[in-house]
Length: 210
Ligand code: SF4
Image (cartoon, rainbow, N blue to C red; front, side, top):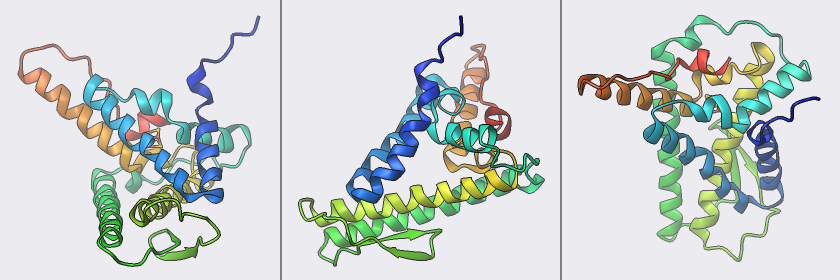
């Protein structure tokens, strides 16, 4: 009898539904915070990359599209993508843009006008004004526009690298993967210096996700 897949192998549905819901109502973008905090909490609490290896719907979606649907060239990603300087440089850039998005939210909270647009790839401003956000506070809506832009940008980058290289090549430089790997390594270093034997399961971004 064919063994049933565990529930967490269907989390790609969550990622696909999340991106679709944002088109109908931008306020659903807030749900994306789950994908921001859960990986961090798992790596802080457990000291491993279980989120990347098991529970990340986005990684599964790339695997599905690039693998089963054949939308990937299946080429190894270039070496520079794996390098520490690129991964940490990209993380720094990504978090700086994230900080600017939070600052825009603050400005709206302080009285500036709500900007009903989603910024793709940090440059292209897509009008997103068909959505009714009047029942939410302007700053709540502004965060949703900004955060959906962050999620859409990372999805587009992931899809491009999926097509050009291997299905999960985005995982090589994904900011969440870099952060959880860093936390995991720090945690194990601390365990080692306290004389406790640590079973390291941090992996590099590439071997955790490819
Ligand atoms: S590296 Fe990023 S996209 Fe890949 S599995 Fe981890 S969190 Fe998901």
